Length: 611
Image 1 (cartoon, rainbow, N blue to C red):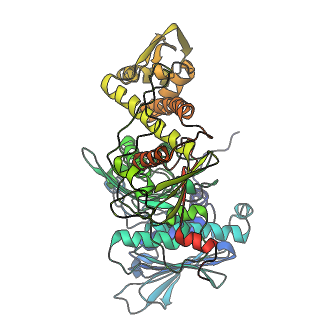
Image 2: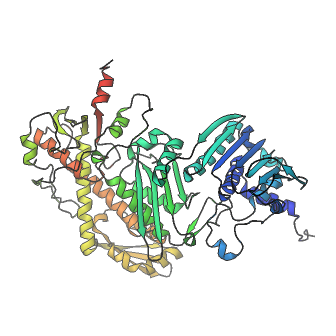
Image 3: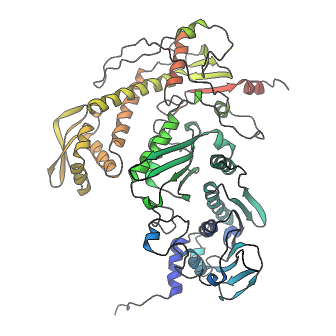
């Protein structure tokens, strides 16, 4: 006979729940710090022993817990943060389910000491016995979690070394510290201070945030990132995106400096990740990973945080609204040429000689925008893929450029990339600006200029008449899934505007009769499948734009000035002026840098001048 159905005991239920909520000591740290922040703490101290396995202690100066509520704190689904379903639909606190402390209590020894402002003394709750006794501490709460997983020894075997678990705990606290620059955090490990981040004395929120990001992620991140602040209006709400995004030059091989927060909660979200990857397209070399600290503020009613047991995932009511806000904000910031932007300030205590990459970012080249008087002499290229490429190879220099032969720079010569001096081995342009030396890869720079112009032309064609469509001599059919069939039917008009003619052939197949002219050489079936999949989740133009840009990038690479092409001084200066006025001109289409700078201070340091 099969076993009969019976109700599980409460302790086993809590241990099963703990398996979902508590993965490792860092999970305990996250949940306890969440509670401390909900208690309005401004000073939080975390103490660890054996990577958090022997002890996780979190002490805060929050409002504390009333004596009458202490016995309820360790019970399942007991919380002060929500009372009804309506509260769950607009959660504004870090915790809300009332299951974390109960889950921790089911697999470890828990002691809770708390005092409110009006209390004569603190009260201590022994989780094992349930005994409540007088305690000693100032206003706030201290929670001690000892011998984690001792009641579920099989789970304990899956933990890593103490050093690894300590690193995970520290990373969890870093996330909280980045999200709350108004709170001080201290982390102790084995009785030694491991990390400390004090709240900024500034009353300015942006200054507080920058100071905390610098404290947590270091000066290198500040030097190699730019500030982001955007505000996208929606019909019934507003999405605000701020933080800092890393420069493409500073991209890393690992995705270990990517922090996304939604209403102060660290999350991993596919919508936001897709928006960021799209914003960095054409700017990253190889498979490099960009760095960012991104804060998304959205009305609580428009985001569901009750999606994952660990609360690390969210679901947006209007994902496209968030996607567009993130993409537009990041893309706009990254498109501005850095040659005309001031470098971020760092503390004067920074030491060490800067690398060539650091020098390019740290050089004070905050000169106004370049001269606008540039007449262009076109160089006609052969027609390719149906588009006549009638772009200038280089611009004729303005009169102001040709007449100044002096090496001195004045405010009447706003040239961030300087004045060309010579060409090195037919590959690099050497230029002098007000701060020092600029080295430009002329092929990479011109490739970006041509590429951006081709994109602008294609965008203009699409806005005016939609993308030109190329009928297929022999229509292509393919077996389609139910989702692909539904997407093709419901998005017929957007597909036509993008140059596609896709229709149902049978109940389970689609036929492609036309594709965009720009993509006529692509695999029609593969392109259609990618487009339909992207259309089902994101904006229809995303995959199309990516494929289109790949073709335009190839055209730009073939059309750009080649290495060993001898340029005159006037041609070199004209190229520099175009770089200053072209979006994303700091990288070529493949993500390689187009220029580097060394200030006079850097050069003096290299040659030991002044020592």
